[in-house]
Length: 206
Image 1 (tube, rainbow, N blue to C red):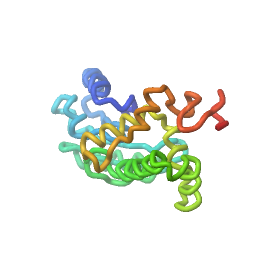
Image 2 (image 1 turned 45 degrees about the horizontal axis):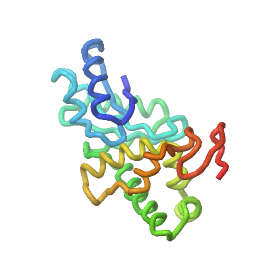
Image 3 (image 1 turned 180 degrees about the horizontal axis):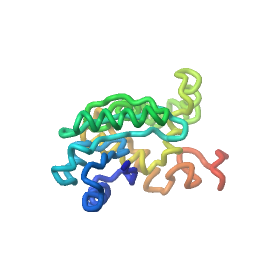
Image 4 (image 1 turned 30 degrees about the vertical axis):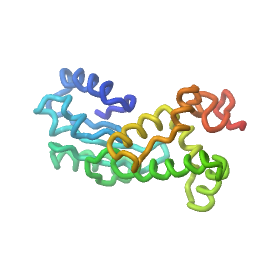
């Protein structure tokens, strides 16, 4: 069973308590969380189930992205981790093993980059569009940071950024503009406005 509800520790915890009552004893349970500690999430299950719980962070869009971060909690059974890793490989994914640290590996790198990208915009050094172009053509990224934030939603970006800031302080600081966009309801592509404007079909128009 792979859980992929919103990036909120309390919401996930409530779901886990419900699942604990209905899943078979030997069920392997994984969270698709992109940032929350697996060991902390595991504490919502009965002690007997915690050995069968781990993190499987699939990257978005899942239909195209091959990477999966496999995260072991304090009590994750190595055989469970091995079985989950093999299951990812069987469906064509490329799993990597990551220690249970907040944000895991890729998001810590990504959000550090986003922090600096937003800072450049706040300083008036570059526009979001120029930074996106620079990252695509200069770094080989398929989409730029501002395009990606709009695609995953500003809501999710803010939630993960706040989790990382709580864990690491100013090393991964939540920029003021992200908070302003969120408060203004400019939540990204599916909402018609984020860093950019979009039509009702999600096509960028400005």
